[in-house]
Image 1: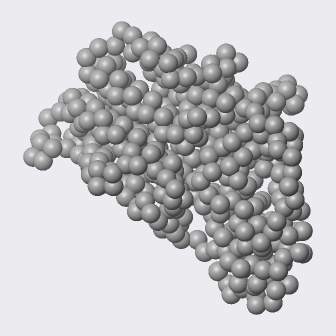
Image 2 (image 1 turned 180 degrees about the horizontal axis):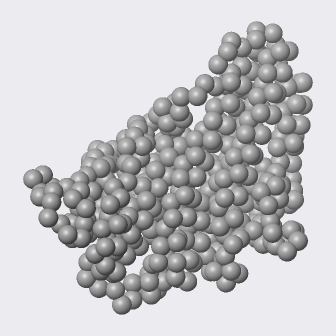
Length: 420
């Protein structure tokens, strides 16, 4: 496990670099720059600072990823949020670096002035707040926002009513999670389904050894400051992809992309003319999560339980919090998808090689949305068609396990599923 003091030191350096990346040096002249706005950092200094940040980013991301394997669930969950925040910050920075690189290439002073009139930089405070949150607090209430929980009102002391409240909360929370998985997952799926078949296939089959060749092709013929900016942007993009891979679980990542790629192919085939829809994607979510089966199981457990009212009420609260946590995580994923949508239109990544890389990143995001949603519903194993199953990262106690433990439910033994 990462040394805590070393982690905090690296985190402090990274957040400082991120916050000060676009800050002008103290005392620098604010006028007389013909081709840049008065408040724009010089390209040379931006290149130098971003290169240093990329180095720190790699160290920090690797340290954070190590917490995903912690025995402490709070640490695992906190690490998820921190890696998501780091990936978003770096994808937004990729956008800024590619824009500046484009300006250097054009060498058109009027175009540069027009573009540089924007306020260079990225909004970093929200990222820094997530990164600095204590690792042992998990996904704290401060990170989940200020909205009140539905169960904030006083619980019933009547056992029958408490069971009804738990059943209702399970139904609402399952609906929330399935709806978020369908909505956010569809945003990622839409981008992938719009790709031509070759680019999507390459994105599904993308492995680390392919990256170097693709990146070399993107940077071919580039020199000077533009090359420095472009190299750093591509490095940060590759590192953001690594943080997403870590969230999926690198040991199952390739299998996961193949499985989700298969679901995308099913969507194309099931809809006439290949025009898939969010509702059709929602059917994939339902097939994987099986909310109706889970509700039926919980209904039978509630009828047979001898758990006291306090245990039932605690389960109600925990089930609601699970839905809120998933909402918080997918809100971060939406920011990731927005950043990807911007950078894939920039010239350097609008190339065939760039499209393969952004396809691989987007596919990784889609896998994460689907798998972490399943983790919040059930445990760390997906079972398809009652005969094919595979493990996924198990970072939270899902709705099924939460209710089962609270009600003291014991399931009859079943024959082991075939592992795929």
